[in-house]
Length: 370
Length: 258
Image (cartoon, rainbow over all chains, first blue to last red; front, top):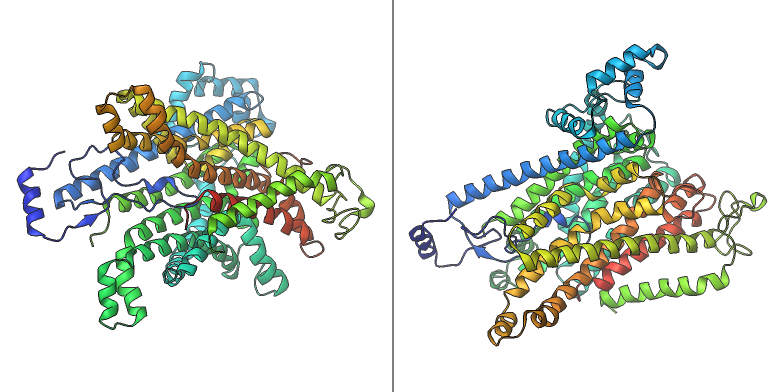
């Protein structure tokens, strides 16, 4: 996709100020990643904040970029389905015992097993065929959204993991905005001095090093055990949501502090900030309306990485607080070797994480016009 | 003392010192149970107290450190080596090889790391080898991507162009100009990866999916300490602090200079 040269020249001529956006350069090879950084990859640790500034794209180029982002998202989802499907297929192959017998036991109950029913299932599912055609059938079913029946409860997997998924989403809906508020406010405050920046870096390292379950246990031992304000674990009332939500807020928010602090520090070097201060604007106004908009693109992109991190971290945090979400459903399924549920839960979490990462990626590439 | 890198190196130095001198002080067997002296407070003969089965917490911590670090180191080194070679190969050959490597990396990246680790651990037999393989399967991607990117950028840089113009052989250009740039970028990535590997091992142990008991392992020690949080808080605090300090130290030591 190349732009007509005349049009690009006109845009540049119409805007004497060079617009800078973090995007793939219009007309550049979409596979090339040298321009713009794939933020989706840095879920842990220090984020890359060095992005190559590019010329602002025109509206049609913007639409094309959206299309490419959508295509990338679809490709990633497909990659997730294939990878998870392959691993889970290998898992069923590696399970000891006869698959047909296991399926028959799950379908008709262990006490009603007959040789005829087992052989019938073997024929129906094609278990007597070699693995390659069976894997093709497996993937075909997966792409139609059919992940099968739980080996433990004998109910369809989607019925089983629907409610846990909703409970995890409820946690995320509370914790994500809270983490953004926390991270951005603390980051902007810390960005105002050199010592603050160093403190942000220390805080970022501690946040990266402190496992989410340790944070959760510390919070729980203070607010639930020592003070007795909140229930230690479980699910049922709104108060059960508080501790897991705060833990996830801290886990995602502390990472945002460092990103915001660096971005705000870089933004505060911009000439317009000095001008705003010279005008005599109060410092809070400078921070909120002048520095923050300039620092926005990496912060917004990283906020979505925080969402991905939060969803992925849910597996551990939910286990700490015995919160019956999708993460603890996955852990239980792994412990019980319930492959269909492992597959369904992994795919559900992975698609959510991929979506959040793709949004981060898209924002980092596309940028916010300054 | 506001240089984060110095703080990181200091933390790591203390850790190395503790691992080197620890075995001289703590000679107990980490598996030996002494039920009569379960949950005893710090003192003699247990410097950090004993756990619910009367095992020496300090000895378990040290052996856990050795275990975590060796699994993390071997998987990170294997994965980084493989990733670097793949990245360099892709950058050197270009064309469809580079495309294939990029596609493989993108596929591996799409799947959340910890989920992939859980899946592979569920697939393989539980043990250091299975966990190491699961970690390596997720850790090769980032070095590969970074190496490919840096090598491509470096090969277009002015010094390399100049070296080509004056006719230096390709070998010299790669060894003297491109490789040093790539390795410098790689240091930061490897530090990050190392921390991530330690966290993943501990998280698996905490979830009960990692190394089987009674193997001393930091994450599993935290899980074991939970019922006794009030009687023996040190059993929880010590392994938690070990994990947090090791990872934070690695990050600070290899991260950017302030």
